[in-house]
Amino acid sequence: FTAVTGETGAGKTMVVTSLGLLLGGRADPALVRIGAGKAVVEGRITVPDDATAAVRAEEAGAELDDGALLISRTVSAEGRSRAHLGGRSVPVGVLAELADELVAVRGRTDQQGLLKLSRQRQALDRYAGDAVAVPLAKYGEAYKRLRAASVELDEITTRARERAQEADMLRYGLDEIAAVEPRAGEDVELAEEAERLGHAEALASAAAAAHAALAGNPEDPEGVDAGTLVAGGQRALDAVRSYDPALAALADRIGEIGILLRDAAGDLAGYADDLDADPLRLSAVEERRAALTGLTRKYGEDIATVLAWAETSAARLTELDGDDERIGELTAERDALRSELGGLAQALTDARTEAAERFAAAVTAELASLAMPHARVSFDIRQTEDPEGVEVGGRAVAYGPAGADEVELLLAPHPGAPPRPIAKGASGGELSRVMLAVEVVFAGTDPVPTYLFDEVDAGVGGKAAVEIGRRLARLAKTAQVVVVTHLPQVAAFADRQLLVEKT
Image (cartoon, rainbow, N blue to C red; front, side):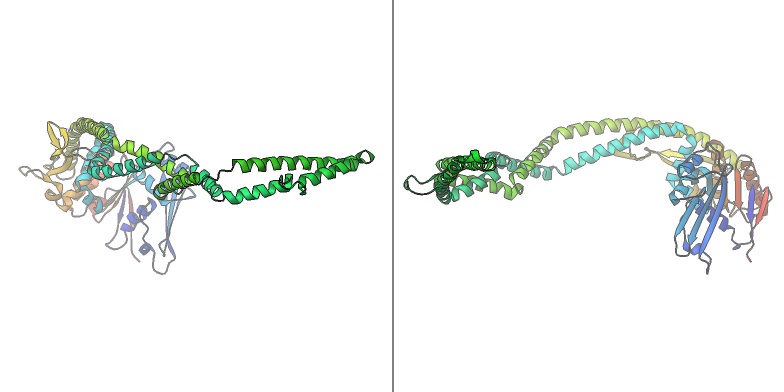
């Protein structure tokens, strides 16, 4: 048990601020002394090898030094912050992850936090342990599934008109494409055919002229053509090919040229015969291309894209057309999940009610040791009726991610006084003692290695201060306790005294 004492303004809270920095708190450049470039905080925390904090530190690359974890935090005057854990640079978030398991810092802000109903419910759940944690985990999963089903159901029902309009638009587009029946690549094929038909006369004339040049013109028997000339050249070489192998090779090459010329001439003749110069066919091709262009203007840059749009839109239309069926499925799923949530919420209420009795009795017993022998602590666990909620105890009640319960800590400071919320029924000193009593009760169920209390005895004096000191000393039997205090009655119980002086 260490007491940190000193005059007001001497800097006792510096201990709390420093520890907050070591445990991932916000780095404020105002903490840096004027004229200095940076502020540095270093800490040494003993951590068991099998503790979660030790495992997480090792995952971050930190090394333990004889079972101790060395932590440092540097804050520059410009506001930049650096953190080191076990000799390794780490993100500040890693320090924050270790904070809850290593040190519990309790101060005036925590007293205000205890006034929030959500914090009071969390305190009760923490005390209850697995009795609440297990059903709460199941409840959380069911709650997420219910939220997802409800969101999808709301989207389908509230956007019914928009979805119907979308379905009509898709259906119209699909019908339009189906009426044309386009084939993949058909637009490219038709473009080539239209080009050919549009220039059929020029193509036929060119093919005839090329054929005449290669094979001769029947109307001009004396005309010279390429085939005749090549054949004459081959005959001339064949007559003397036996005298020189090189010349024989040339004769063979000329023979191959003759074969190629005859093949080309034959193909030109066939091309001319097959060329379709029918203007009716050209008209049909252009009409078909116009129909395809109408589709590409609306649904894609080419027919391949149009067909892809049709495939996607057909799937989407199937989804939209199945809205009625999907609404029925989601409605059934939602009702089943609401029923399941109701059962889990009832289990949570029962577990919290049982834990609340034990928690309240334990805190009341601690208050008796803190000079509040007649004070009584209790919990008010209630639900708010909501016709759209889940059924708990035969009533439809509002629900949230943590159940259907509103948990409020009540205090009756003396006999005859009605239990009132601690926000209204406790003075500043009483609230300090209630918070200390809650922490002592927690210490028996979920121990933290180190507790730091920042002026938890504010507004307290006399016998009550003595009892606070005695209770902190008892807490120090199972944990390290550091207390920033003004009161000699509290400091007198400490094993170690640290005096802060301003010079």
